[in-house]
Image 1 (cartoon, rainbow, N blue to C red):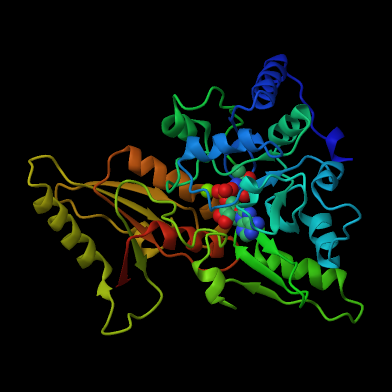
Image 2 (cartoon, rainbow, N blue to C red):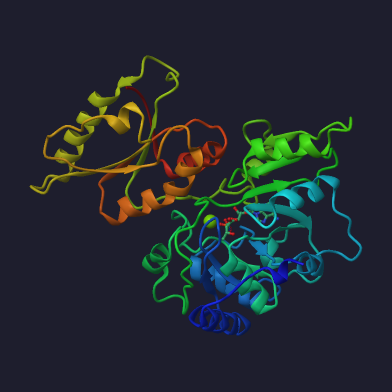
Length: 384
Ligand code: TXA
Ligand code: MG
């Protein structure tokens, strides 16, 4: 079973894991690395411990948490006795667990309602990061863990991000290096009576990957269930308003600097897009005048590295430009890995405004744009 998988070699790591596990058992929250983003963990089956997550993050009580398990055996302990998964879940778990995929299950008596925010379902995933897996296994209990940031801020992808945000509020941050995926897990609901899969939040496992494995496994003439992306393929007025729809109700992924999304591939509802470089020059004048100081205005630009914007020479007009590159167009996984780091790095550098260039909504790009749209307070149509 998966519990035997973590290999923990160095004595320092072992000691750190033991300290973190005893804090967790004493109902304290602990920050730890996962392959997606850093998590703020607490015992999932203990209402008091879980409540510490909400108070530490300033998280609204109606936003449910994901429980993390390290083995199929541990998953079983959270589910109703003799519960049988939908057949799609067997396929998804076989291909994507451990990994960046969260599945909804019917909840059971052992799961405190603070975790589910009184929903009839509980969200569960099995992370692949060896430190996360070892920590859960050492603690001997599922861990509830949202991203380890104050509510509303970008999710942390390095231990330093967690330290900067939650320093003084938690006793241990386990440092596992930079997160490989960089965006949160894909949240999937396969419990609907029609048997289709609904993607509530796009994430580290792409829609293309899910469709591919379903096609592979169901090639014997069975009709493949549909894979429906919330807001792209379906909307539901009820969940549109509900906090259980990830990121729908609350401010999300926002640094303190205002973020403007530059839409480069579509036409505005009216008129023509602005010329991109003219827009950028006007913006620097605007912020220069608005700050009314002699200090130079700071503009952060997050862009692809091989796009016209990424390759452009920025105006030499006294503005302090800071670029953060998301990698080449053809590698959306790289953009996913770097996005939150870019937002957090530019924010810490004190930008007056952060511009983010649109990426194509294919593969990991779908999740990247989902986060960017939520982080942005303004949209600007531009052409380069
Ligand atoms: O990659 C991840 O999933 C990270 C790492 C730490 O594992 N965790 C994470 O947790 O992103 P959080 O709390 O930031 O996001 C969990 C999302 C929430 O937006 C919530 O709406 C959704 O999952 N969720 C949790 N339980 C749910 C449920 N029963 N029904 C629908 N959505 C649920
Ligand atoms: Mg979060």
